[in-house]
Length: 278
Image 1: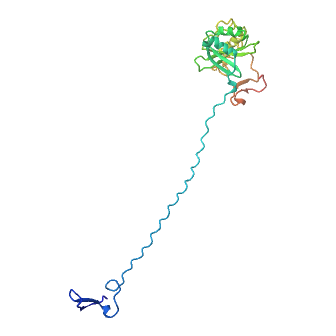
Image 2 (image 1 turned 45 degrees about the vertical axis):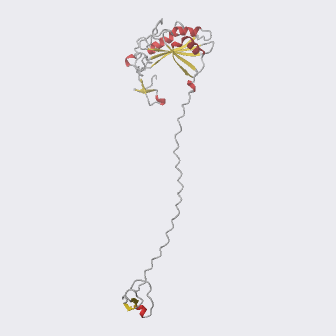
Image 3 (image 1 turned 60 degrees about the vertical axis):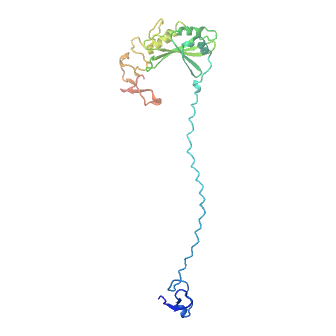
């Protein structure tokens, strides 16, 4: 309950002679403790708690090591040189390049042998030079053959294999030949070319200009076609096979068999019982 205030007159009050006295003073209780008029002690201001200490900055974690980069594929190794096709020195090639450089189309190497592809127009002149040159002496034409390339503008290559008996050198020559084109005969330079060129004509159909006897040498005169051309049927043409003997009890029919060993071969089919000539 709020205490009553007592007013008494006093000469010391310069304004209205009144002195305000607390009821507690009258009762001898002494002055009221500081506070509001009801005597309630003032609320003590709560002690301010100490400011929270700022934690030290966290030490940044060490960065994780980067994952190792995926190993890059090693650079492709350069293809190894094929020792079979490595160039070899050749006195014959040097002499051809020296005297007939404009006639050389291509030079290739294989198994230590040199092959020179020539133009046709001076072929016989080059042959004679290779035969008669004292340092070369290619006096033996060991073989003449051909290769059929149906997809090329000039589908045939005529190949000459030369050998020097005195110097033991070898040299291969090539001439490109178109369908119906007649390269010059080599029989005027090397007599053995007579039979070699007849074989090429028989099996490939290439005729040689100036040959003294351009006739078949392996197949019969009645044979139609040239068996070593790529477009010739592998089994031959039925109408080309002549019936030279009566059919026996065992007839052997030969057909191409891709399933045979090594991927090629002839498969024998016996249509009738019995044994016959295979």
